[in-house]
Image (cartoon, rainbow, N blue to C red):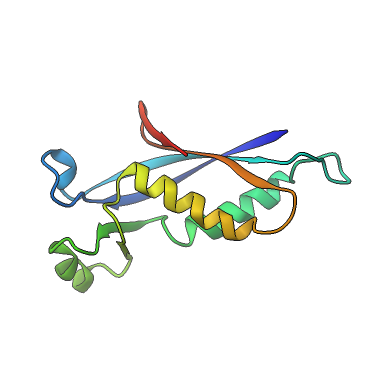
Length: 134
């Protein structure tokens, strides 16, 4: 059985060594769908209380990504941006929607390390018609 919660956050980014508009500094209002599964329901008949999932999302996503600016640490602009942007997020890879979806899922793995619940799917929408799913 699965449950899914939708969450929105805002973040800027730039793509390193990319030939296109996304090489420029820009931002998105990301739509995140987090699906949690369990083979068993808890004593309340739930996979998970939605308020607990909302708290997990705030912990994993909002504290790290919301209203930040992501830049690949190898991007030469990172040094300049560090000086002027207090909410700079230096990433280990190019901050594509695919990379971000993977990192968000990895953040939840620690949160759900024990117990019967697991992250089944992360769907991260960068625009109204483009998303990555893991």
